[in-house]
Length: 338
Image (tube, rainbow, N blue to C red; front, side, top):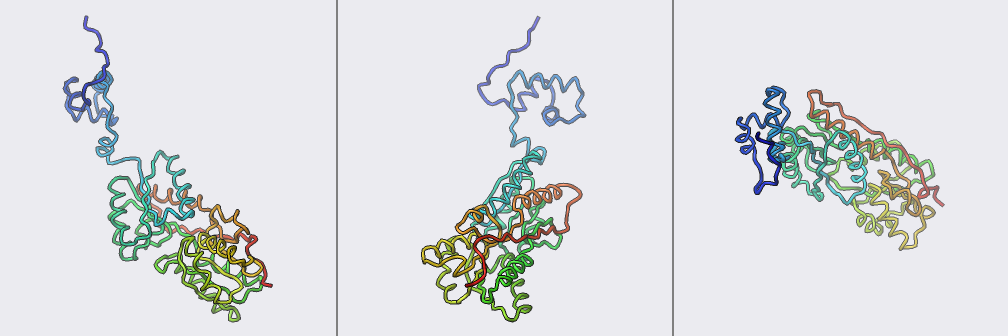
């Protein structure tokens, strides 16, 4: 009586060809068994699985993904991983993706708009779908890219319903923030502007233009700045020259950089200058003084981006833009001018 062959460690990697030869079936049959295709005769499938076990074969996940066209991996393109705002959004996105059995691969474009299309295509070549976080590329470039990397979802840019999108209402948010400062009695307010190419900056500027028109006794002075801690730190000389009693920073990162400089310069916040940010990154609550900002639940936004991207991978995408309305988090860095 011939006994069952002992499972041994192969001297070379076992292939599907080896399995097919040992089982006396075609490679296609072995592939169908490995992929769980139900059309294979149950007795043949059981025999093939027995040979797989005997030969110690471990299927290549890469090869299996290529065969099925599914990797259970999605890509995320971020413009600046140094910005804690994106960390919070990514956290929510990653948690939601993991619950659905997906892994996340992240790529950083380092704020280089011209590099984004190639990076996005590279991500899509290696994953099942791509999420673009606040892409910096021009609108024509974005609209041209979307069909090339679909399924795709976009955070903080409109897509003309060519892809699912999730947005923060920066326009309304900055109006709420400006009115908060006006209600405290500030009539000369500086805005530390973000990158000219960023939708978030366009929307803030649009909201502040409406405030200028509606509140004729209020002066809002735009000061070119940027998006980083260093930009906020370096903005002080130009900000000082405005004579403003309050400042709205492009984001919390800029505001925190400015707070560091103000501390060095001996400028009391909020007694001599009220400071407000935007995004409510975790550091904002624990700065000294704690930072007034606009909060939109960044982790929840990340979860929503995942739901939109997951829908893009089905026959029923969610193409109506989803807008998050931020709320004021009034803290110690703003009060009435003295």
